[in-house]
Every structure is written in structure tokens, then in C-alpha cells.
Length: 170
Image (cartoon, rainbow, N blue to C red):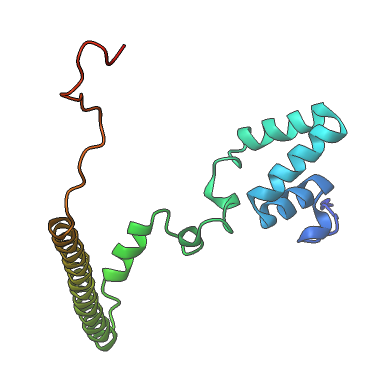
């Protein structure tokens, strides 16, 4: 006679997870901010709890990993750690020639438009600078013209009298 193990199959999913695993999954889902809030709350309630959460966050690398900052960095949501990775991914061919042709044409048009806009801004800055310089020169010319027309005031300072003899003065 053979003996077989007759254990009922375990249900899969969250029903079987412990409260710790459920809370860990919930905090991971909410992001790094939830972990930090839980740590601060732990410090407020009883400082060893906060310290334990902090140690767990560092030990499990949740404090510095990209999995907990999903909501903070838009490029991380798309699987790119750095914006340059996203730019390189955009330049890679997709395999669809019609789309790649459209993308290349659109990028070329956008670059031309950007170049034209930057040239426009440069011309605008030059025009503004020229306008300000012309205004400065006009004001300067007006000031010198006003100074030439106005008579010079005579000095009102001390002028000794030539008539004073020994009895005048001190």
C-alpha cells in the first residue's frame, strides 16, 4: 500500500499573505512617500518602530531603489532611468518603415521650426538692444544740447574784496 500526501492546495493570491506582506505590498504600491510617512509615524508612536522601518527600508534597498519612486519620475514610469535613455529609445527604429519615415520627417520639421524660432528670438533681442541703444543715444544728445543752451551759473563761493584795507576784516 502506498501513502500519498493529501494536503489541500493552498489558495494563491493575497488571501494567503501575512499582514506584513500585505502592508509591504500596499506601501510599495503607494511609493516612497508612503514608506517615509510610515517611518515618521513609527517614530511618533514609538521610536523603535520608526527605527525598525528605517532599517528595513535601507536593508531592502527601498529607500534608494527606483521601484518606490514611480510617481516621482516620469521617465522611470516608462522604464528609463535618465531622460537621455528615453531620447535614445525614441531614435531607435521601430521596425515599421512607414512610422519610422513619418517620425524622421516630423523630427526634421520640429528641428527646423526650433531653429527658426531661435533665430526669431535672436532677431527680437537684437531689435530690442538696438532700440534701447538708440533711446540712450537720443537722451544723451538731448542732455548735451540742454547743457550747451543753458548759461553757466557763476560760482557763489568766497571771493575776497579788493577794497578792504587794514580796518576791514577781523
